[in-house]
Image 1: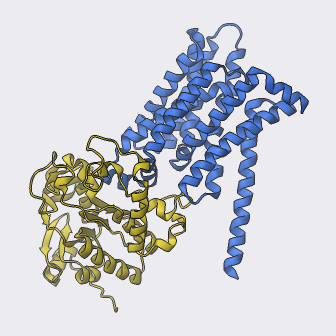
Image 2 (image 1 turned 120 degrees about the vertical axis):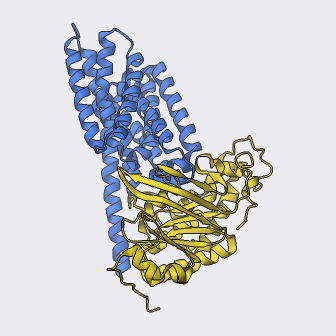
Length: 279
Length: 281
């Protein structure tokens, strides 16, 4: 415990916890729509394809974010456009594009001369390396996402539930889809430094899916997803400090434990209600 | 429920033509790929009428209503709603309610009945109408500024279609008939002029269907709704609708039920293998 308190005094640990909370909030917010619109594989593909952006950045000797952010943004928009323009199922298109992007990324990394440690670190992330610029970027993205999604919350829910009714009601479904993909792609990009390509999707999918298990109202679902995102980050960071585990995976493991606990609770709850009905 | 003044108060800059008929369709042709699913269909819906579109499977009924609502593009012809061409409807879109043929959704979707009904409420429209005179036309209406009025309208709409007791229930736990009533409340939460039902009662039992029609007619009388509905149930149509359009890619006939649903017209629309079933209640 003493070690943990000492650890919390370090600025890098404080930045990491703040970053974890912001990423938990951002993932919890966007994750609500990612899970309901079945975009889990989309964000997964964008995360993995980011390897190309990172490799390009290293090759061109550019700062990480200056290549990663535009690349994931353009990649997300292009993939959505391709899904709209073909008669194939979206998961087919995503698999094709993901395979192509990963192959390109691996080939590009082979051109990188010398030490590749930083590149490998991107695969698993390092939340302890978050700096103030990353915090500001994540904070601004969360603020922008919150303003956009909460001001248009009814439209977002309606177009998620039934696009035909949304269109009849005058909602520009296509515009909203593309705007959401922009937010999603940027969120994946800013999360990669902290949790890495392999775990970035967890922030977008696990807290929201966990909240969905026990929610019957959208407002409760949204709040619970945000709370779980934040709690997982704090608990994961503290656990990583106490047990000296890697920070990003610790957060994801806590998210997973929450998911299992809520799954058990919802099953038990359903069983009890069915028993009461039979009586 | 507050009944609005005519749409001139809502979007005077868009259309200044008289608003009768509520819907005017002229020579509408819609292609599904290279196949003409609807050909040169013309009709008008006078205000306050309940009109059914009937015809065999594949006759283009759903295609017709989807084109009218702007959900499908049409190759030729024109559609005017409340005197406005479809492409220039703008805020008049909020005057149209729609219940689709298949309301398929994830049964685990975390949304309560009252939340679904509330999705029919549109703040932007209020900012342009006389319902909120304190808000100038140019000003954006933020969600919390109308939350009290919205909550009252939701409660009123749910009470009107008798689903208030279901307000906190998840929509995934509703029966087919209950869901249709909730969708009707979604349309009722704001005043509408045109309600379009695309086989909205498919999958609902006969009693539920009869109750829904009775409710629909009450609402039509009280709120002056004009209803356009696609239906396969000719017996219910002849009992509850004022007008019938018989469609089989083109318009075979139109008129009052007793005239449009005559054996000869039904033979022309459905072909010689058609036999009509009548409910016993």
